[in-house]
Length: 114
Length: 116
Picture 1 (cartoon, rainbow over the protein chains, first blue to last red):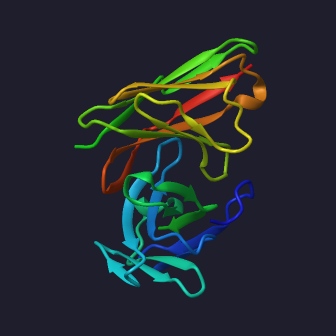
Picture 2: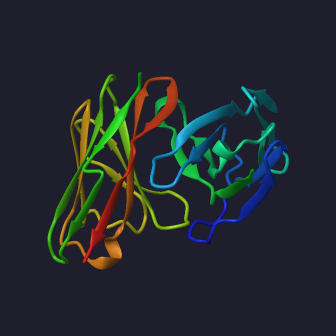
Picture 3: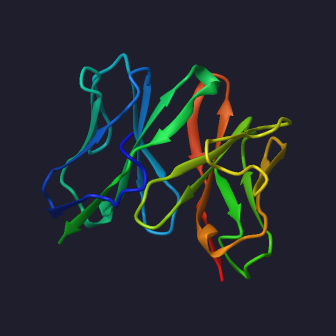
């Protein structure tokens, strides 16, 4: 993931717009990726995951795109709502099955204006 | 299902004292638990990986004698911050994984530690 210890970048959007949050990962051996949402003072919540044998996966209002060539992930949120305001982290995993070790990226703070 | 709890949710202690944080998987058995630390406006940093019945594996730079981890059962892991100092003030988050081929982690709500 991105360097840990740096302050979070911020993305500001208007309610109803689509949001795109990007993440660069570091390990070319990573084969399982997860996006998390973290609200202030709470633990991360799972949003969506994707394995390296896919380049796109869709959920409810969210889409994750994976570009292994450039080691890049993105999270697209459609029709962003004020309740989507939070910090979003990508996490890369490598290893095998139960020995996966997760590493979090630096995160992006999403602010949705009503 | 798949709920992870932490206790306490927040704690304030004096410098030099020890603090224990519990992480419990409420409705599943967790073969692996992870402990993270998060400073304000920063990412989660993995401190250690804990497998039930064995010693924890600590990440580089994390003092194992200062952050004692015990994973005595499949539903409970504890993190003890020994001789806490103000620089240990942080948000500590645990996660639990069922194991086998299931990679999904379930996160606890976090514990806010403030050392005076």
